[in-house]
Image (tube, rainbow, N blue to C red; front, side):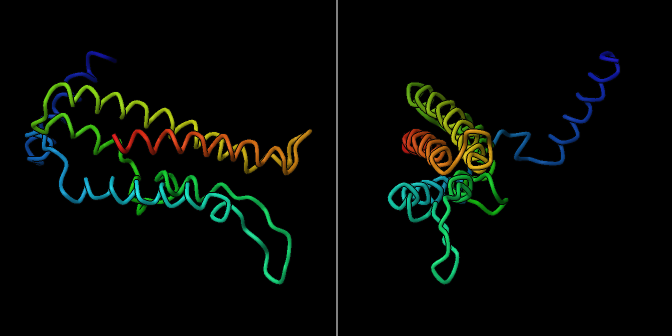
Length: 163
């Protein structure tokens, strides 16, 4: 099986490289892609500055208020293809094609790894918080606990993006 997959994979890679100069040349990120990082960073800063307000949803007419982690996942680019940070790791991978000082490149890739780790942890904590009230021994305190853990990870992700 592997003997037949490798030639096909190499042939496909060659076709893709011929069809798309961006893949063949290893292009650096575009201005629009870099702007996505800036816009995503700004959204994260807004979320952190307004965390309680953004993660609290109240029913109309004075109804019950609940905490909601969806704004966390949206700010990290995990809800929609139109979110600025959606699949931002692909943009990070293009940075290696920029003309940068090798010392800066090492720091960038370390920050990129930190971003991925914090984003994944924040996503997990945000997701778990959505069900904290319904789990045995759960309740609003459990929702808040996981939401606050998610916020800590968003702060780490923000720090990584700033780098």
